Image 1 (tube, helix red, strand yellow):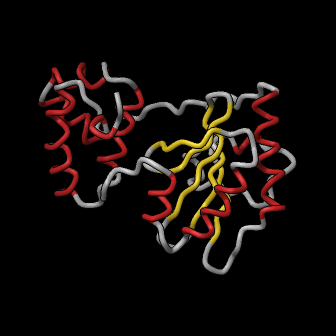
Image 2 (cartoon, one colour; image 1 turned 45 degrees about the horizontal axis):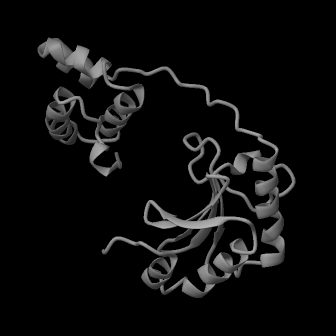
Image 3 (cartoon, helix red, strand yellow; image 1 turned 90 degrees about the vertical axis):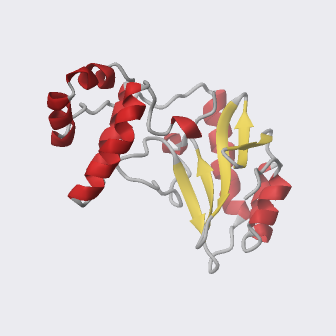
Length: 198
């Protein structure tokens, strides 16, 4: 799929939701937001901060509120897409049976703008202690220099590697994943660095 560079291209790439996404776009453009494309999808910024995103998926489309956990008055439609993982991001989902009620959605956007105007920021997330899994401990015993290389990586990158191995169900999969990541750790790279922009 070609790189999306405009909202028009994004709508064309999601024909099943294009009319609904266009309605949401028109609503967002009635507020003092700047329309842009980030991560291949429409994002609306305010005072340089990511405020709201639009997204189309296979079975639904959604409005994303980057700091949605700060909303106090307009909360009944909000969902945390990944409980336990997502700290502040909230979404409102729609499907083929639900048409967005623009009068109902406007106050969500207005409150989000007011929150940024008041300078309210989300509380810092509590950082969970990093638990080194047995597969890593075993490799560190056999390749002693690897432990130092691994622990010198930023904690976020260490977590990515630990999750990548932990999520594998079969021993063979864990083994092949470990073989894949050892050279990356030696190079000081994170698992997902190739997807990140410099």
